[in-house]
Image 1 (cartoon, rainbow, N blue to C red):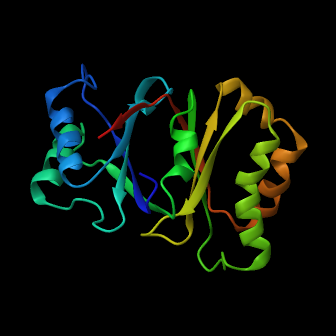
Image 2 (cartoon, rainbow, N blue to C red; image 1 turned 120 degrees about the vertical axis):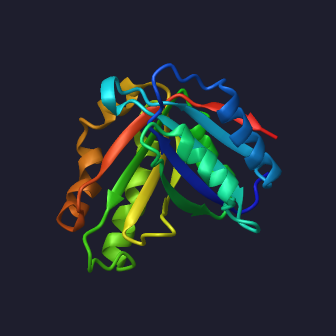
Image 3 (cartoon, rainbow, N blue to C red; image 1 turned 135 degrees about the vertical axis):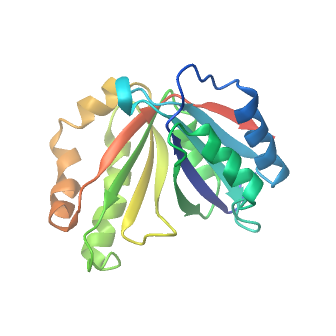
Length: 204
């Protein structure tokens, strides 16, 4: 279960009254299992109001890739209140890398998008991108995780970070260490954001 994966992050604006135990969502998860998925995660964002959404993280085997059949993608669109679920693909060399975050009590999925023209492979930027993740191990309450660059956008970097509590992250965000690499990257960033979840893990 620790082979190479393509992690698909799907954000779904669910309709009023939706529940994760709904048959329509269960059928989608079953279809992903039939497509070779051994590990998936889902849950509502901690945000309240219109920003609240369902996030589904599907760990597709790299050997087969994401399921792109019309029936699967059309059913996914029907689940979204606007008919336009948003997704990103993030490759990992080992499925265990993001798992340490995805099973945490508080899962933080955040982005560091770089400006067009930025050379993300330059030593200074590449080092700061990695240390933005690795420095978290100095923070009390950090449970692990990893980061990767989106397949469809080489300027979009996704961070899968696990915390014992949201407060643990917020306290770390007030420390000088948190800001070292963020300040280094900020001149090259085109924004960024974060969402927080508590996921249900499904293993098949």
